[in-house]
Amino acid sequence: MKTINLRDFYYWYIQDEFIEVTDEVAAELYKGKRCDKSHERQMYRYKAQYSLDVKNGCTISFTSANKTTTDPMTTIKEILLSAYRTKQVKG
Image 1 (spheres, helix red, strand yellow):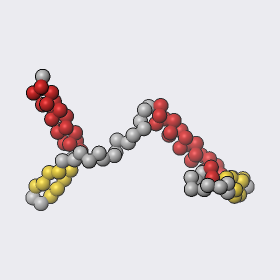
Image 2 (tube, rainbow, N blue to C red):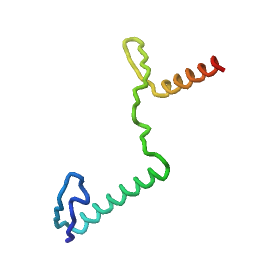
Image 3 (cartoon, one colour):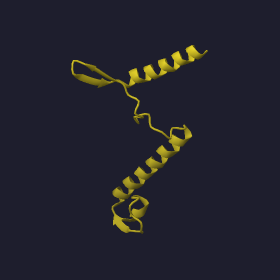
Image 4 (spheres, rainbow, N blue to C red):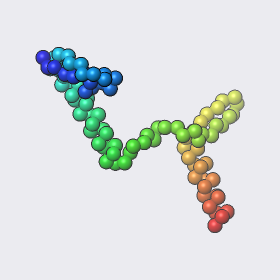
């Protein structure tokens, strides 16, 4: 049996809370913590502090036969095309 501090693993513990757990449970908790730290390091190493899955509100909806769909690739293409056309008009 190992004694762990729950405050090290769960952010909502504001005071030290020591409990005894089996060796397997402690190993899994420490493994998860190491994995989280590793992910954090890789994120900053490769400068990926943001998520590509976040929607920024730029969507184009297409309606056809009472069916609305949103295609993110079409949205990106439209944004790039409008920027390209604007540059051609000014240049």
